[in-house]
Image 1 (cartoon, rainbow, N blue to C red):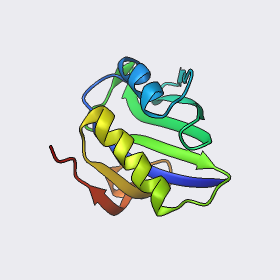
Image 2 (image 1 turned 180 degrees about the vertical axis):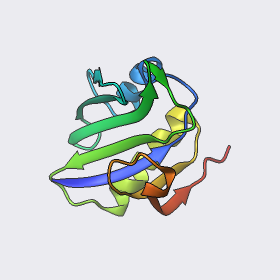
Image 3 (image 1 turned 135 degrees about the vertical axis):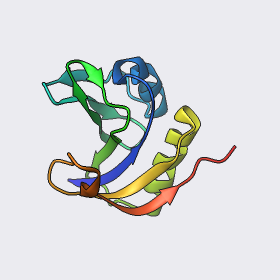
Image 4 (image 1 turned 120 degrees about the horizontal axis):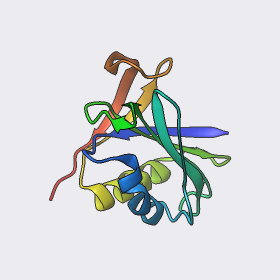
Length: 124
């Protein structure tokens, strides 16, 4: 399985963003789950013919908006520039925010764990 890792910052609860993520990634129904440290949405994306996983740290059922909202695309296909740019475009169109792409070390608890390889600024 190949992974494309992106992240962004959105000042809203993941649950409130669910329908917008479903539309953006052409996913019929993303499933929401959580534990005491993380919350996430996941499911099959028709857009990239693979799984999409959106996650962010939270405390006591409250999102931590200063933490990155991670968007991981899992696919059997090769990760190409076309897939990256398609992913950036749907995030830009749906959420009007800058998108970062790179590698996340360990569990991604600290911002220093996010190794940015590229930044795609949202421009009006």
